[in-house]
Length: 376
Image 1 (cartoon, rainbow, N blue to C red):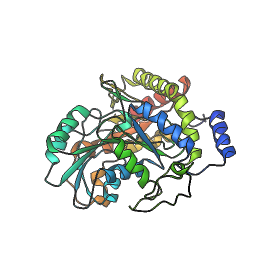
Image 2: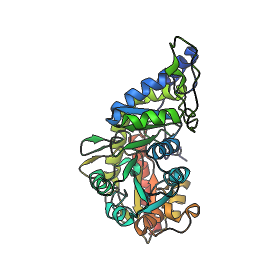
Image 3: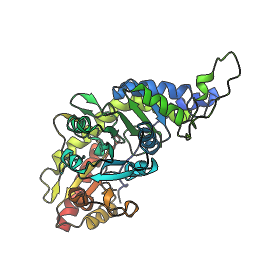
Image 4: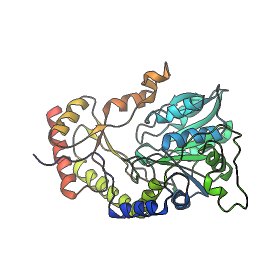
């Protein structure tokens, strides 16, 4: 049997190891140090913003974002329904209630009309999600937010390198959160970041991500012994210097990683365009897709479970797309989001990463043709 083709795979090598070795030599391994500072400046440029903050993961970044925007118990925050539940969890962690809004059927991002319909006197903000990396409709969402006095958080977990109408993902709304989990386009295994054009939000988040005090590096060079005072509850949400070193190399690789992923997506489009029972993902003309994932939609008559298990048995790894959050038991009774609920049962993610060879892409496509035909 041929070697299994991974669903996702990081693009890492000797350069990352060398960068980590330099951190080891420096003696500063803990978070919020000079290597993190370099990464933050570079990542702010990637996201097209003035300020960035490195965090331990995207979940902590989202929590910080909501907190510095003033989210509190009794508030309602409208959240894109089709997302890994870390998005809704962050709202709950901030003490507010997530109110899930349905999605567009084509690119699976939050439907602005559904947002407008979900607004109540308790609504304070919107969390949009760039599903699989493709940005949401930020012009329409910003108009709604301005009309009702709401904040916008961009959940750009999958979107490093994406654009919307010529602007980089991470520059929309009041603040954005990124993930550098192992399946993301650029990764340190774990890690996250906040980006914003509102420096006061990042400055506040910087204190909170170090238990409520300024990070140690800010006290270097003091002419007296600085003893920080704790005036606000914070958390340890910092990225380590080891992760930041890896991320700096990953930023060097970003353009190549994006080009390779886009080439894989284009090849899938050629090989799968005539496959009956399968709808291919859509890329809108005003957006550049980073292809964190390649998700197909199976016809209702086809058993996704059967297709998935057959693919895996033939060495092609796959998984469901992401979650319809409103059906998760944690959140209790919620208004139905029918588009999200439907796609939750029909979406299938197939191998997508920058290391896929032409032969592997062709093998995935050929296997999918066989498996879908057998399941139809």
